Length: 619
Image (tube, rainbow, N blue to C red; front, side, top):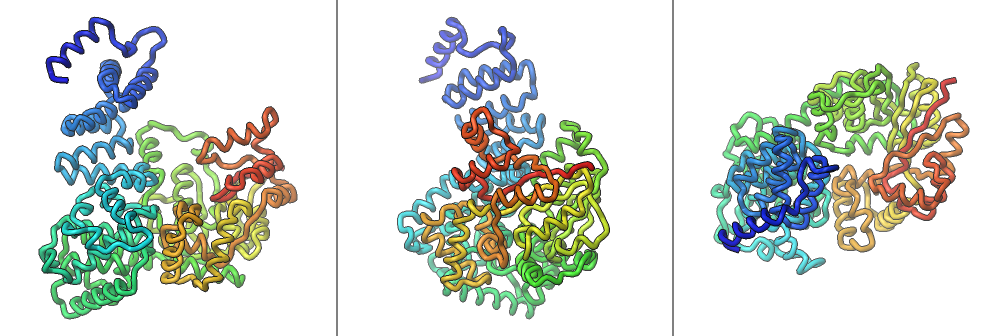
C-alpha cells in the first residue's frame, strides 16, 4: 500500500467511524482502553492500537503501557529513533519498568548508541529481567544461527571452524544484551552454555596466538571481542567455572595462565585479551601474586573484571574477622556440611531481587504495612550468602535480624553484599542450628528455608528453632519433598555408581554426561541450580540430604502446638486451581491431609521444596 492508498484508507475509516472504542464512552476506562490497545497490537492491527494509545495519552500523558506500545510499534516499523523517544518517556514515568528499559536498550543498540543500550540493558536485568534473560537470548538471530550449527551435529561436537567460520566470535561479541547478561546474572540454559563454551575455546585460541594466518593476531583483536571476553570471564566466575572442557583445551588454558604468570613476574606486557581469557578459566584471586594486576593500567572493562574477580573476593576475606562465632560446630555431619559450603558458598547471587520494590517504596509509590514497619526480632537460620536475609531486611526496615550460617565463607559474601546495599539491620554470625538453643535469645519470627534437611537430624534442629520462637510468633520453613525429589534420588544413585566425587572436575564431567542424556534428565537440566558448581553440588552432591512427607510435617506441627498457615504461593497458578477442583466445594488450603492426597496425584507439585508458614499459640 503506497502513501496515497494509506491516506484514502484512513479517510474511509474516519468517515465510517473508528473501529477502536473512544475514551469517555459509557463504561470505557483507561484500563479498558489499554487492554484493547494491547489486543489490537497482538493482532498486529497497529493503526487501531496507535489510535487508542494516543487517546489515552491525551488524557494521561505519562501512561506507561501506551508509551511502551507506541515504542514497540515504531520498532516493528524500523523507526528506532521514534521508538527510543517513546521508551524514554515511559521510563520517565516509571523508572523501574524492566520491560521499557529492555526495549529502550534494543532501539539504542540499533541506533548505534552502545553506551546507552548497555545502560538500559543493565537496568532491565537489575529490575527483574534476570530470570527471563536466557529465554530472550535464545530468540536472538545471531544466537539461533550458532545454535542451529551446533544442533546439526549434536550430540557430536562441532569444530570451532565449523561453528564460527571466518568471523570468529565477532557477530556474537556485538550482542550487547548478551554481554550485559553475562556480566550480571547466571545464564541457566543448556543451549547457551554449550554455545558459550565453544566461544570460550575460540577466545582461548585467539589469545594463545594460534591460527594467526587465518585470523587476527591477539594484539589486533577488535575491542568488541575483548569486551566480550571480559563479560564471558565474569559469567564463568558467577557460575564457578562449571563449563565442560576437553583435555586439550584444559592444557591450552594452563599454558596461557602460566604465560600470564611469567609475564606478571617479569613485568612484561599483558594484553587485555590474555587476562580476560585466563579469567574465563581460573578465578584471578586464586592466582599467585595476583595483586600485581591491580598496579597496572587497564581498560575500563578489565578494571571491572578485576573488581569482581580480585577486589571483591579480597574484601570478603577481610570481612571474616568481623563475623562472630555464636556457637561451636561439633556435630560430625555439621562439620562435613560446613566444609562443603566453605569450598562452594551457595548461592553466588549477584542481583538484588527487590531493587524495584525498594525504589518504589523510596519514591512513595508503595507504603509499608503496619506489620512491615513494626520493630521485631527475626532469626534467619541458615542464611547462606545472604540473599534471603537481605530481602527480609528490606521488607522490614525496622526489624532486627540475626542471620546465622555454618559457613564463614558464605557469611563473608553475605556481609559484603549487605554493606553494598547500605543495610544496617542485619547481624551475621556463624552457628550450627543444633546448638542455637544455648544463645539465650528469642524471636518474633524465624525463617529457615532449604536448611533443616541438611542437618544430621532435621527434626532436632526444628525443635531448637521452635524453642526460640516467642508465643504468637511465626516461622517460615522450607523442606525437601520425598515425592518430588525422586529424580534427584535417581541421579544421586547414578553419580555414586559412576564414582563421581564432589570435586569441580567431577561435577563438570557429570554435568556433561547429563547433557548427553538430556531426555532422561530434563528436570535436572531445567533446574537453575544445575548451572553453577555450588548449585550443582548442593543439588546432586550434597553431603547430607533428608526428604520428608506431608504427614511427617503435620505430625511435627501437631506435636509442638504449631498451626499450619499455608504453603507459599505457587509459581504456577494452575496448582491451586487443580487443588480446588480435586476437593470441589470442600477445598481447604490449610488442610495438610488434603495436600497430601493432592501431592500423591501430582508428585511434582513441590519440586523445589515445601515452603510454608506455621504459627505458635500466643499462650
